[in-house]
Image (cartoon, rainbow, N blue to C red):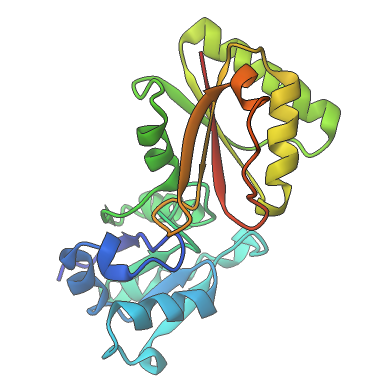
Amino acid sequence: MEAALYLIPVTLGDTPVEQIMPVYNHDIIVQIKYFIVENIRSARRFLAKTDKNINIGDLIFYELNEHTDLKSIGNYLDPLVNDNSPMGVISEAGCPAIADPGAAIVALAQKKKIKVIPLSGPSSIVMALMGSGFNGQNFAFSGYLPVKPGDRTNKLKQLESRMYKEDQTQIFIETPYRNEKMIETVLNACKPDTKLCIAAGITCPEEYIRTLTIAQWKKEKIPELGKIPAIFLLYK
């Protein structure tokens, strides 16, 4: 096995691992002892689901999340640098380094000229774009929008303006408990002809992907997404 930093996608919910993970990923994962993870508990759960024969107690985890002081991660790659031991990066959901703190360790690996190998797996952002019917050749992901209502409305209007001027799909996310408030703000801030796609629970039993104009959404019963991770997309 090549000594490298492997970026390991995980399930987006309680979807069975075998439904979304190539066999190749499994064969890589079972050979790794050192993992850099967003959350140790969920990483252990994912690894146990990947292969019941993995001895979780033998593994070594380095935690990297939004609370981690980036000045403290300088030694995280030591097993790879010093001993040529392959290492894996695991996010809470989906792909590491995409809307994810793992980007910091990938940047460090690149700086140290360490080989980085991204593995195939589900990305809710890309899958939402696939299912939206929007422009997949020109798109932008803006992450979380401002929390304050006025700032959020202004940001949405900026994204909508860019969408029309540049023919660019605009993609953003929200904390699940604020999903319904986000939808309400989008419906009030955007033009009637602007299209909104709501993509939630991707790959899970509750998966929901629907595209309508703002005018059409205002006539619809808004889906209840209080606890479901969702992606929002705008297009003309």
